[in-house]
Image (cartoon, rainbow, N blue to C red):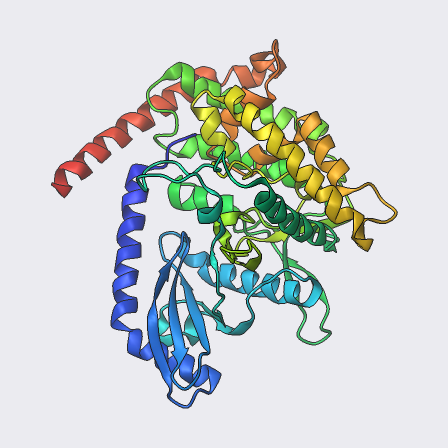
Length: 455
């Protein structure tokens, strides 16, 4: 996996800490704000904080009943500042759409607003129902002695309990796969007609990560619009990968061979688009949530019934082939981590049996669902995506930091590599390597200076 920019990471931690302090100082105003928005007649009480990867939430309780809600703010730093309003609006639209059109247990949005409407201008917010349950990943993972140990699926997990979890997630995925739009992008509901449509660019998880942690120039996304072809979307991703490699100063270190291997991987990824990126090129694009995983689900620890699915930020109408993939999280630990450790075969040995178990769960769900009638089943499409290698192409297309590892370990074929690149591209080698070595030298000096200053 490509490293994050150390200096950017440090700045993010500083921004997040400063924002947390602002929230602490504003607790009284926030509680009063929620109280007024919900008409609680000054009975609101502060119930504590919840911290996530991208958001900080406050629990606010109704003082005269058991009712309580969360008010959630995206954290500056973790979320690129100018995109915070856009992120929250997009997520609210998706949550409302899912509550209208699916049985997925999504929290009810009580109220929401942009930065200008928030208490003390803290940022865009969502006030939503507080959902009961325990983090599903905690219920599935192998017990560890330290929080520093990697999270991985418990190999001794009760198979019946895991089957029940898989069936529930399979039903969610089946429903999502049928929520189709004519373009790739963020959805919204027209206030006048009440119709849902794609209304803007697809703001994605990777876009946020590459800007906040990879020094990617955010203004290059400013003109991005929705897409009416999957292949156009993948071409845009390939250009993003190349720009990321060129601008992030520490992405290739000072190893020329490694730097060039990343250049080749990203250019070769683009060459795979005609093969892997034109499936269902035009037509219906279903809603896809890249973060639909146990970490963002709550469940009853006794029954394993999923009580809530959370965090639909960065959910958009996306290429249909994404919806045809198996969940990448079946082992909980990200596949790219296994690949970066040189453990592809170990990953496959563990993942393939879980893949079959999940497909069987999907088949059971499909057998009971009218959604599957008259078309190729989602379970069959999942198997085809895995067997064809498209699973890995899709996964690579969603991560600027992992595309190199995934290409070389899962997509590269013997005898290709530089062989599929044209002469003008290969002629860029000397200039590219000189640029990367100079970049890293400047980055290293800045990092060392920053670390000395911190001491």
